[in-house]
Image (tube, rainbow, N blue to C red; front, side):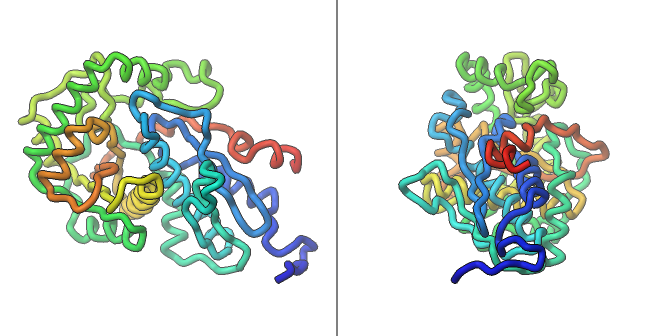
Length: 337
């Protein structure tokens, strides 16, 4: 059907500059591996395309680009919420065009539809969500709160599981940490994305050195040469003070990785609306034997993709670096301005 003109004189479905900026800034607030922000947007009349950047890679940590796809999935969740808050229906298709694999998702957004209260609350959580890499207070997350967070993953094709047995998890985390600490190539790659001087990294990506607590495990998940790795007993004690969710998919293809990130971000934002702090762990799952052991020990029917740790905190974590919105929206957006 041919698009009709609106009262404002623009075609139905066309994005205004203000709407484009809302979409760009909302996508930028999504969490990503090493804060690489591996995405950009292309806006067409009535649709938004989310694309994976091909110039951002972590060949040692993420040779299959699994974490980059998960990161794009978190950006898709944010994009969908932004479209809804702008008063449009959001119909997302993952990997819509096999001929253009860089297009992660297409969100059809031409039809008007007011957002729900829940969508407004989750959208509000986007701007206050932080990666809390330190210890939690130890106050428990209630079963009702956990159930609400888990329910946010329903209909995504991804299962959010609360793994039992912190003793096993502690052993897995300890082994993964020692493997990564001894991996020279991994350490060099991590150092490239750990930013000591914000002014020296104008692109607004990477992890602030000050954001990494001195005793990271299992809190930050990022193991450096100087990290003191606690033994399994201490790790178990720490794990018992927080709530962990494991995100698993039936298959292990790129579409599954994207959907895992989508589900993870929905759950994380729901946690923020409940006053919970959180952070993502993927590093232990990039050690092949740890990932296999998780599948076997927990009898998973699919593949573990990421862990979300939740708890309560009395401090506000610092905001991460962010790229400029023009970098995400590209040259066409700059020309329209």
